[in-house]
Image 1 (tube, rainbow, N blue to C red):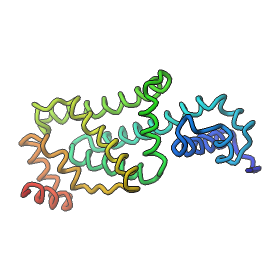
Image 2 (tube, helix red, strand yellow):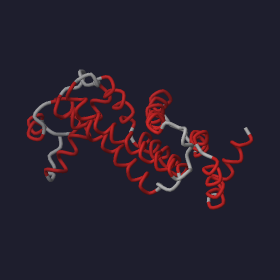
Image 3 (cartoon, one colour):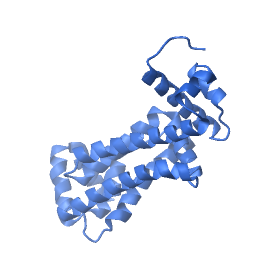
Image 4 (spheres, rainbow, N blue to C red):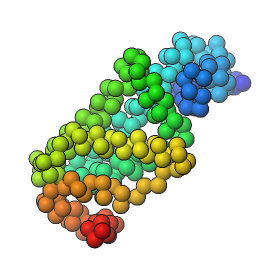
Length: 222
């Protein structure tokens, strides 16, 4: 049992991270506050000073993981708003790093989906999902207005497709213990949605980024 004193915010975060691990490995119904306290190296009484119940901890765990995804994608889309290929490559690389950095994250994703019929879970998780899909939709629409993405493409449907890619990668992480994604996959995923001008922009980008140029040539020849 840990006896080292920590600042309140640091202790609360420590308990939350431990809760995520226990929830991911035991499911919500299998987890106990005693088990979470043991994982955190604190007493159960101390845990209750920061979180009033297991349910409150679970909701905080959902907010933590969903928020990490939402903030990361927002940052990437803001950095690469001018070109969809760079944006999607960066998003997939971000997805991969996020899943590889924590073996519990993929499990949490499916745990949240399993509990999504519960109103308190929906209340916390769905706004993050709505935000991510909205960010993707807005960017696709901007790329359409700029003539990069085909205007015949439904922006909202395409946004859901790319959002769903994260779920597929999480499934790969769960199934195989690792996620193997290269920029080649991202170029191949985005290419069918590009307009003729978008294809030209891809070639221009390839001059600046030889790796993407090589991938674009490979995919065009397939």
